[in-house]
Amino acid sequence: QVQLVESGGGLVQPGGSLRLFCAASGRIFSADAVGWYRQAPGNERELCARINRGGSIDYADPVKGRFTISRDNAKNMVYLEMNSLRPEDTAVYYCYLQRQLAAGTADYWGQGTQVTVSS
Image (cartoon, rainbow, N blue to C red; front, top):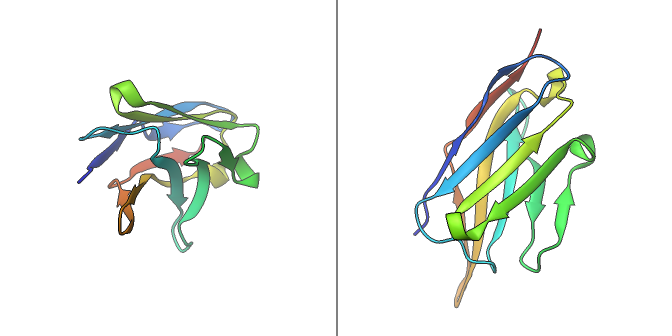
């Protein structure tokens, strides 16, 4: 069982930066896929960035070139560096981990951290 806790959200002006942190209660293995998703009011949860099981990285088009996902398995941490923030980036951001098990996959989610981009 893995528990994920996000932090680092807050209020930032347009054009500003924030760094989100995701701490895992248990070990993160290099074979785990990890990612960040977000959900704005009235919208479905959507992918921001994801490190896949083989190490490749996917970014959603709206955040390409502005957001950077990274991980530190030794510290059981996942990060999201967000630059050039826009009002449309306002959302609750969720950390995600997918682990391959013998019988399938297990998905874990954090409780979310609010990011508000406003002047």
